[in-house]
Length: 88
Image (tube, rainbow, N blue to C red; front, side, top):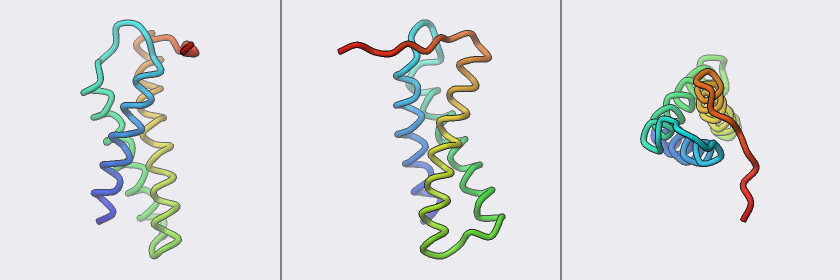
């Protein structure tokens, strides 16, 4: 159940983080995959650190969000994508 939650969180956060970047990038599919990878790794690290139960679910979900955003942002910076504030 945790893995499914991390995958969903990672997909949403990876897609959202990828939308912030402009220019030639990986595209939405790769942003989602990088987000899922970061979320799963972050969630597994917190589970192995001993955060389990109801409180652990919330903490691992938060770390999964941070991990997904971090992987997507770092991959973008390494490849020269720039962050711009979007104007509506």
